[in-house]
Image (cartoon, rainbow, N blue to C red):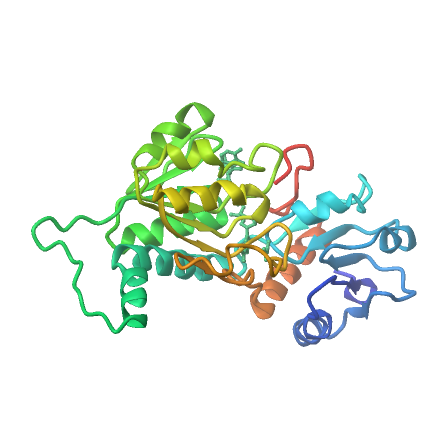
Amino acid sequence: MPNESISILVQSTGIDVVPAIINELKRLKPDWQYAAWPAEIRARYAIVWKPPKALFELNPNLKAAINYGAGIDAILAMDSVPAHIPIVRLEDAGMAQQMAEYALYGVIHHDRHMQVYAAQQRQSHWEQHEDRANLQRPAVGVMGLGEMGGHVAKKIAAFGYEVRGWSKSPRSLEGIKCFAGSAAFSEFLSESNVLVCMLPLTDSTRGIINRKTLEALPKGAFLINAGRGAQVVESDVLAALESGQLAGALLDVFDPEPLPKESALWAHPNVIVTPHIAATTPIRDACAQIVEKIERMERGESVSGIVDRAVGY
Ligand code: NDP
Ligand code: OXD
């Protein structure tokens, strides 16, 4: 493998990770050449997060644009990567475990009435809400059964919850009741006391968490969204919280981000807002995966994670 000819351009919009990525890549592959965008090198690969068109105008011969994250909605929306350059995304790369922790936190928060007890504490009020006669754990419905959702579903099931999963094409996951396609959506929702969204943002998932979806859940359900903000119709979620159809929500992603100061979600007593941290990209795992993918491409082997732009995820 002609290592000395491998030059890598690293770019990121919004998060300042470029020096750390380059340091880690240098540690793994000291013979490769690296530059931080903007730079006048002609690179063989680019590692990017929301890259500008100019990067590809200066580097029309890239062998691949490697998306420094799992979600590819932003890079597709920017429409900056020419069709002849493949986009390769990160798969899990240390994020799925974080997602499972995040979702499990939300499930337990709801199941163990933590929201109620937090409100009581603010009033110095002592009251138990555990139903000793009829202890019943909520069933958890996970939307999206890919790298993130599949892992999340398995981890929540391993914790003893009944888990249902929903995906586009039929999936089979041990211990998970799986549903597929829009025809099975309302059946999937009908017994999901906690709804966890791990979907990618596409034309078919934009606005999917809307009034109709929320009404199909059992009364008093809890929503966890770590997919993308544009999947949620914020006013419908607020209305469902108001009516009691939703007991609460744990929300990590918003449209736009940062969540505007005036959003009613910030101050809602039954909503937990986190700033898109459900799963952050761990530099070591991500760089190890990137090196592996580049080495495979250099050997002319197939790599997983190549984005099908027509499908949109
Ligand atoms: P994958 O592509 O591995 O999985 C996507 C899953 O969603 C698949 O199971 C797919 O179905 C399903 N799906 C897609 N479209 C539909 C649809 N229309 N109806 C039903 N199911 C659908 O993606 P990942 O698991 O790696 O990532 C998922 C998303 O998580 C990312 O796109 C990103 O938005 C978000 N994310 C958020 C982070 C955060 O910190 N908040 C961090 C990382 C990711 P099928 O199996 O049939 O293909
Ligand atoms: C991602 C994210 O898609 O951080 O990786 O949301």
